[in-house]
Image 1 (tube, helix red, strand yellow):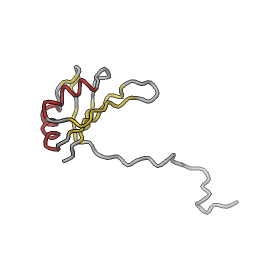
Image 2 (cartoon, one colour):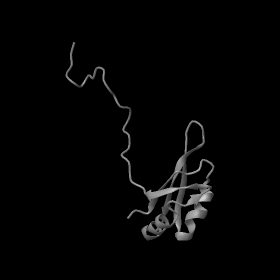
Image 3 (cartoon, one colour):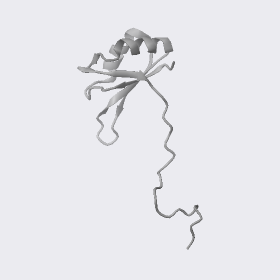
Image 4 (tube, helix red, strand yellow):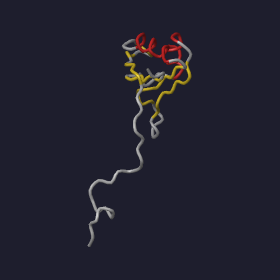
Length: 102
């Protein structure tokens, strides 16, 4: 199991300190990161919590999932890697590499 957890359904007012308080009893935390919107600077309603040990992350997942943090019941799951976006997508239109010629 991974040692990184995804925390969803997070209250927009929740801080990293709130998450530390909720997750620290289950083991040593490596990182807590509330994801913020680049344009508004407000929380996007989810976060990542990374433990130093995978066993501690599993214990926290089982204990905190479905329970309130900052007034909202959060959803906790194991974080999975998403493939990185390698630039803008080109949809439709002329593609000079497709063999289409005038």
